[in-house]
Length: 254
Image (tube, rainbow, N blue to C red; front, side, top):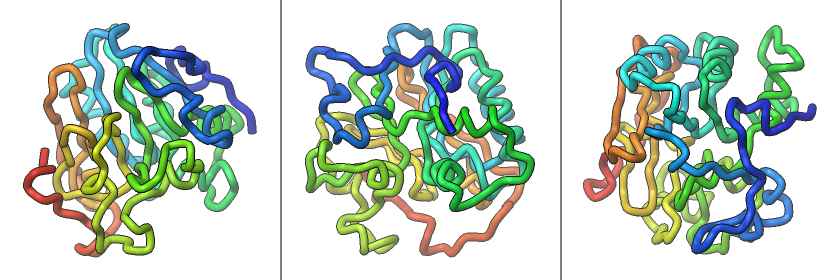
């Protein structure tokens, strides 16, 4: 599969120098070609949305709540697809928005590399997933699906790390501690992947997967308004063990 930046819904810049900010040169050679930048000052409002997982009805409700204008931007943290009832509908809806982009999630990655599949997938759908950046530089912030390992430099991370990183050390799984509890910046990282009962909002990390597909909520963060907007799931589409839904400690709760 192959795709271009035009496939992802907004004009994405291949990253270049920006004073005091991350650039593609700060990433590993494997990741750098998949890094893009958007300047949030080009938009009136900017919203970052958590894992949708095929929940089109909830996404429609959330977008109605956000009351988007033509000059607003919506950024998704990945995992638009799989597990929920309408993956194709979610992708179609995101692609129809005037200004929207998603980073690649681990579930898009599974489709790209043939580890999972969806019925009736077309070439344009595949190309759209393939064109998703792994990391999106959003002003002074960064959007990735999984997270970062606070023990390592950014250029020591591969694609798998940025899509899947959760705990320190990784083998701790859902027992933690979680990377965002150890991470001290300076770049603020927006992420999904780890299912939370409430969003994580701290100086250096914002976690937005509040488990919509598991009966939780679909959550957006208003970047310029510094607020959280969430809509409840219409129902539980898939069960999930309680131990795999994380309750953030008080200092991190949004």
